[in-house]
Image 1 (cartoon, one colour):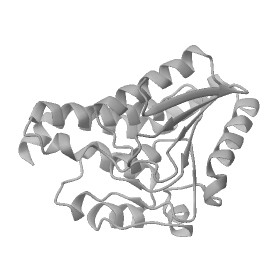
Image 2 (tube, helix red, strand yellow):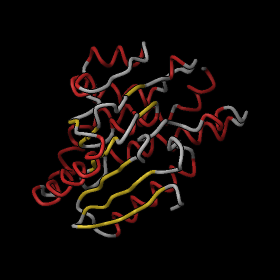
Image 3 (cartoon, one colour):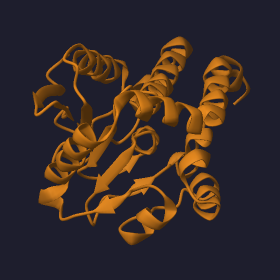
Image 4 (cartoon, one colour):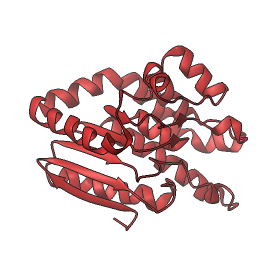
Length: 233
């Protein structure tokens, strides 16, 4: 792990906090640090995981500097790594709770949608911003959105880069509950502790894998086709 990601475990709940001092861009280094923290949670036999942002934001998405570097391989690697991280969260052996301490934008919003339960604040903005900044949303991201959002929110979110906040974010499927900003992390940890003590881990995993199988297949196909999709876009 790096200084941008911290790890702690208490009461069988691992808390992984993203804080790069800015907007928690999900570049290669951050992706690697999160995966290392998830590895540690598994090694520690954590019964639930909380993934949290810093006091400003959950995540602003991919590192645009990588896209602008002129290195297609680096851009493809970052895209693939981000969606592999979403798949890992979707298939993680214990419940994953996200504390959306602030906005979840672009890849940050796709990672948000990959958790089992999402706690946000009244101003936690959720948005797939791609079409507003001249980018085409990758197939893997579209399939993550399709899996978790209502049909109306899915179409507004993909084609119009619609922003969802507060009760609208819950109704659309971005968030599961909203608490005051200073209570987001604590509430997420409470949900994680409840899941850790009330759920059978094996049944939890087997059931969510069955429930998500078609979406996972579609997301995986998107990852496998990123090179072609990137070349065509």
